[in-house]
Image 1 (cartoon, one colour):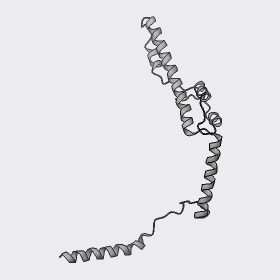
Image 2 (spheres, one colour; image 1 turned 135 degrees about the vertical axis):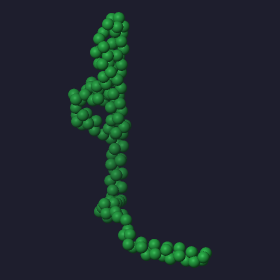
Image 3 (tube, one colour; image 1 turned 180 degrees about the horizontal axis):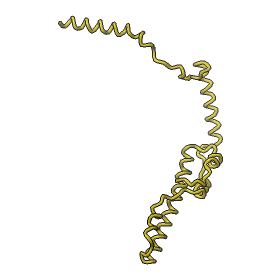
Image 4 (cartoon, helix red, strand yellow; image 1 turned 30 degrees about the vertical axis):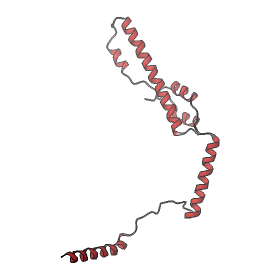
Amino acid sequence: PVSKDVDLSYLASQTDKFTGADLTEICQTACKLAIREEIERDIEHQRMKEEAGEEMDEDDDEEEDMMPEILPSHFEHAVRNARRSVSDRDLAQYASFAQTLQQSRAAVTGSGGGSLSTFAFPDQSGMAGEDGVKEEEEEDEEDLYS
């Protein structure tokens, strides 16, 4: 679990222009750091337990099973080693493309920009005539074979 001391709003403000994949990498790195530290603590605890001759309380075993908490220091390390995968130049190109695409849609479909907010299937009553024609054809086929 993420520690309550981690200010996610601040983290978000400092990682502006990072992609979802970039942010995922930061979170995974922070998580791996926490797990590594917990493994190192477990190894050290086991070593101390063996040196003490297994005389430690069983209550300590419950502490070992706790899930490691992801601390601000883990995120700090992860962010310091992270990099954005999309440059400012690429972002400007994407924004330009999006604007051009939006303008093209507006020119073709009107001010709605291709919105499907008024989408509806055709009225079913208009199709009844077609069904009636199909029923007559099926009746004719039965007459041919009787």
